[in-house]
Length: 514
Image 1 (tube, rainbow, N blue to C red):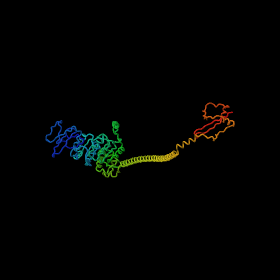
Image 2 (image 1 turned 45 degrees about the vertical axis):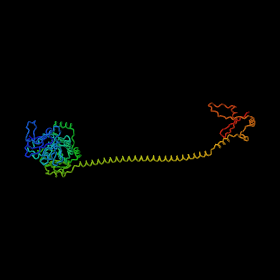
Image 3 (image 1 turned 60 degrees about the horizontal axis):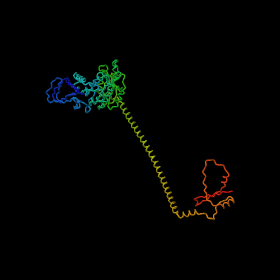
Image 4 (image 1 turned 180 degrees about the vertical axis):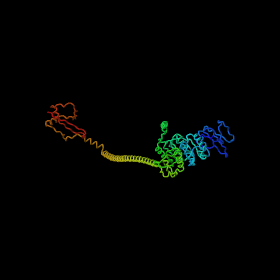
């Protein structure tokens, strides 16, 4: 039987024998996922019941039972034909193509056609062991040649996530994926969401060009089978990723940096009556009335031709069909008249416009904030100016008051000095003596007597002390009625005289006695 390996990548050998006698000894590597690692001639494990070959005494082993992945310990070989290749290549190989869904109905034909045209193929398969057996049978029955089998590398790959697909892409510089029924294995479907995972993986892996084959049979196709309808319903119901429409898929595609060629077609089997017709490539949305379906082997040849000259088909979306009257044309002739897809350019312009608008909005916001800050600063300057002017006026007013106060103090001081200079105790004593002097006899009292009889009687009266009449307190009682006595009091005469230089006042009352 053929030697089998449980690694994630293998190189198919065409010899069915388990061991091979080498004319020229060379360095050979045999690896298992967990277990011994042998350098030298191949040896089977003792559990299989085979005796160990003692011819190679230089062989030795390392036990990698605790190592999770042997790939990290094996150096990467540059040529797939010289040994087993693990992991991603350091540099992209322009002659290596990764075929996503290589076990699909169109995918397996694309892989075979690429091998015939000299490409190295990394075939993404869901089950590595089954694909290895299939490739061994293909080489055994001469479906692919021995030289082609050396350029075929099967890698385990599903459509679950972009990172695992990017690892499977490895050193491939080109990727192809077919959207349609029966492209994920013989019966399963590759949806637009699955193809988008491949596109994202290609961007992660640094792939230069991606070819997408879109089979129109998968959209709205029906087998008129109730069980198929129920299966499709529940598959869509419990699917983690909802299928995208073709416009949505294209919108996601143009947002990546990967160059692409999308081939919209309707595929049929190779043995159909339409398969001998020549291929016609037209711009998107322009399908002639005399358009026929395309055989899967024909679309595989077209994909290989596109990868031979990617520049002529770069960033184009085309309609592919066959016509009985169409002449045979090469890939340059088929794609040269097709205009480049304007979606990516429009997306780039819209993105640039949105970015410019965002920058303008940010600039306007900054300008508004700057204007507000300037306005606040001007208001603060005005407030400070008003406060400064008020402080200046208060200072001037205070200075004026201080000057006025100084002048008034000076006047008071000068008056005080003048008063103190004119004040003496002798002068004050003389003024007091003059004020208290008695009037001389020569002076006649300034008294007016009402009658002669009263005047004569006054002369005979003895002298009496002056009585100062005190003002009567106000009474709250009603004023008594006027009597003769009150009338008599009204007839009394009083004499007021100032004494002691006007410091005191003497009042003399003269009463008429009838």
